[in-house]
Image 1 (cartoon, rainbow, N blue to C red):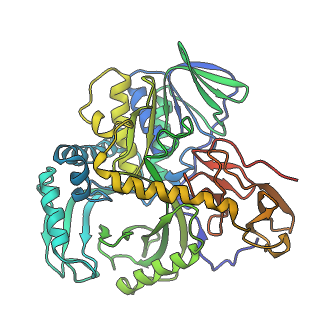
Image 2: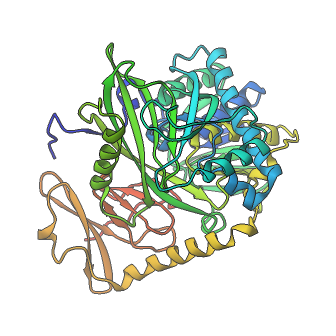
Image 3: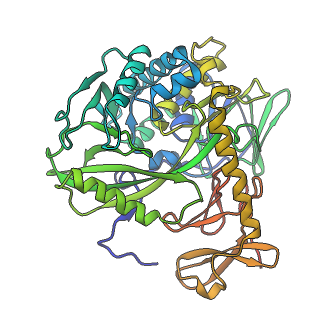
Length: 506
């Protein structure tokens, strides 16, 4: 379907200024020390650091490197937790909070070291971050967070009075020495450094299954990779049907970007205390403009249909604080996997000691992905790591039972879609370039009408655990409201935990 040339681009600005690295697919069976499945920030960082340890490493991805959620990130590099230190301390205690601050701080340092070592021109910079108070909250919220932050070891965080921000008169916490970068330029640099060290990257290679035995075989079509260790870094693991998927919950988050006059907004990372919260940063755009990037308006994947209205609400929120904003230039959405405690799950897959997983980014994918590289490199190389227990995928944060029960009830309620009618009464009601769910007797059918008017029909049943998918107008995807699997308009799986396409239907 044609797009008005003046309308916003449905995609991130990163893709306009850096390529997504592509390599030849796996064309023969190979043997390596470590096979990494997934070429996003987590997989590539793990592969890069392991290759520096002298391990032979192969990375497989069914798209280009960085082509998943890494291309959708806003790339805030921070140790200011999305879910706040007060929340983490209440669930896991002060020691785990200290480990969280230490590990996220170390992740920013690690990124900076890699940028320098590999001479990556990715616009990395250090800058301050500001957590500012939303009008509906009392100042005591900031006071409690400041106390928890200091207890976690971040003694240089300070509270500033109203008027310290460049756009809103509200008290805030200042987190010094945070970071930001261009994520896809960084990915390109990681790939170059990894391959320079002998690593092998195979893109357009779909992994069908991981088979454990005396060695581990990673099957991809007619070929396989034999490895001593395997890391599954695919945002959400496809190797488990249930174990980890009841401990994390999928959310979509929305982002817009608009030019502002260069220098009109102070460089910084900005976050408010709303729920869901807003997050703001700048990046370069032209000689006389910066690009202001604003995100927020999160909701459970597959459970809302008002994506365009959410983009508009972000713009309205932004213009109230940044009146110098020009016409919106970009909008896009990404998926976030939220865990019960706000920390990623990084470590051995439950029940295995040689297959590792990285999942549960909790809105901090760039630092969590880098922590994964550091932690898993130690574990695979046989070194103890003081962060291992805090991020262990087998953990059971019992003090988050209320959240678990609420999310589990929400997940179970989605199966009610089986007894409901379709979105439209007939295929004739579906516009070109759009999709909808139809009921045909006991069947639910996902129907997509392409830009030429041709109709394509698929089973609406997610092959992971049988939920009925929903059409996402913003991303032109079929989204599973239970565990977050996503499929493109033609039913091809683009996000797990599903690992198969939607079945075509006559």
